[in-house]
Amino acid sequence: MSRFVDRLLETARTVGQRQGVVTGEPKEPVHTTWGEVHERARQVAGDLVAHGLGKHDAVAVLAAEPAAIGPAVQAVWLAGGSVTMLHQPTPRTDIAMWAEDTVRVLSMIDSKLVLLGAPFDQLAPVLEERGIGYRLITDLGGGQPLPGVVEVDEDAPALLQLTSGSTAEPKAVRITHGNLISNIEAMAEMAKLDIENDIMVSWLPMFHDMGMVGFYTTPMLIGVRLVKVTPVDFLTAPLLWAQLITKYRATITAAPNFAYALLGRRLSTADDSAGYDLSTLRIALNGAEPIDEKAVRAFTEAGARYGMPAECVFPAYGMAEATLAVSFAPLFTGLTLDYVDADALESQGRAIPVDPSAADHRERTVRSFARLGPPLPGIEAEVVDEQGNRLGEREVGEIRLRGAAITPGYLTVDGPVPTQDEHGWLATGDLGYTVDGEIVICGRRKDVIIMGGRNIYPTDIERAATAVDGVRAGNAVAVRLDAGSRRERFAVVVESKLAGDEAAEKALRKDVGARVFESVNARPAAVLVLPPGTLPKTPSGKLRRAAAGEQLAASIAKGEADLA
Image (tube, rainbow, N blue to C red; front, side, top):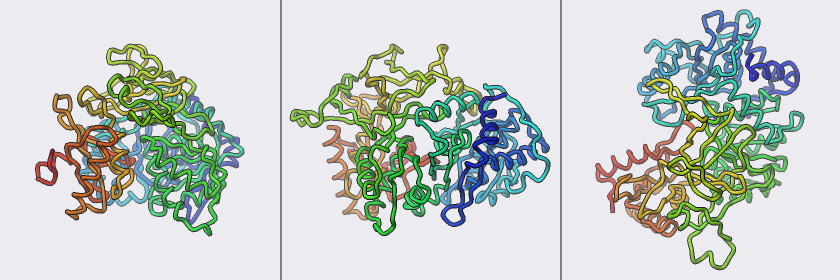
């Protein structure tokens, strides 16, 4: 039997009889033990098998409420199937296009069934029109519970995690039962999860690996208490996050950088009478996007008003190809930055350390990157050059990974694609280096801008742009132009409430250009200002540089943006 499913059953029988998950906050909180989640999952699994679900069948899930998703997902695993969380349409989504993309995904993963839950049950007619089979989650579980688990081996797929790329050319990471148990047990070990005392609070979406694996499957498997709300709950009222940490005395939470920046701003202006208490936090995991030291500082300074220790900030490195987590920073050390000489980094690929407090640092440009800790147990990491030769510490190259948590391959519209070479190494596409065994990430290989023999990292450009008054925090993207040619250069696309005001836009473009030049010693060929909410993003909220490049090209063609 799968060790992953075996551990689920063991937890349901033991600690899961008293520990569980709270859903329904802030209006109607309901506590459900992990044992009760399991019993509901057995009912649903019995129904699914009775209606033809077979061993290794792929099941897609489209729902938003954790109370519905959790038992449904476990039911599929008990029945021997794999789960794919579909990308969720938003109010701005073209439903016809979304439906066509969904048909493409279902064909790719060879799924004949979608489990549909609120608020997406209203899309049932759209699925019917395209011949997509579905069951409403609320209708499941009326018959006999599954008498026994459908046994699968460690190599069987458990989760087919859709990547954040183009929906027109979808790709799913094939995460096996062995991958899941390896990564979750390693995370639990390095985070020192305490079944009796830890309480997790999360609003992360369950269609994203950090929300599904890190902040639902992990506590369900280990038996840790969880308070789970939806991204809509958080975005509607960001301070709900602080309220729940306070109410439940939470010890662990997680989010990408932009969310901590948002919460920090809200906490800085909050009324002291709200009575927030963040002193119980020991882990505030920061991952899924580049860590911005200014955003972290603003968050910790605002949180200090409510007793939050700055040391709880917990930088992490991860990706779906590693199931979830690759490395964790040492516990309760906060954000540790590595300061390096920018010229050596960009022209020589060497991360030469610089003391930022030294007098001579003003004579050269300094870059800073978060130290993301050593690889988790069971994962090896190495840095290699373009020829595949292993590099030493502080030499910049591509990060490669190997271990039990690394996916064996992708599913694509053209068929399966392996991810590992003949020695088991996964090429991540991330550029970085190591310091004392800890991983440091500089950027994505495909996004690096090469000008005059220098490697300019888009994150440095974006950080400079978002420092300009009027640019929305976390909503700036650097775009490569004429990539690979002698004329390679870059442009910057930002969101601002000033969009549409010709004079204000002109001033903002000038300010962004000047700030970027000051930071990276290179001037953008163009700066495009867009209204809030128009930059292309993945379903999990990450900026899509390639799509932003297409957006910029269209604006240039229409005469809305000019190249210098």
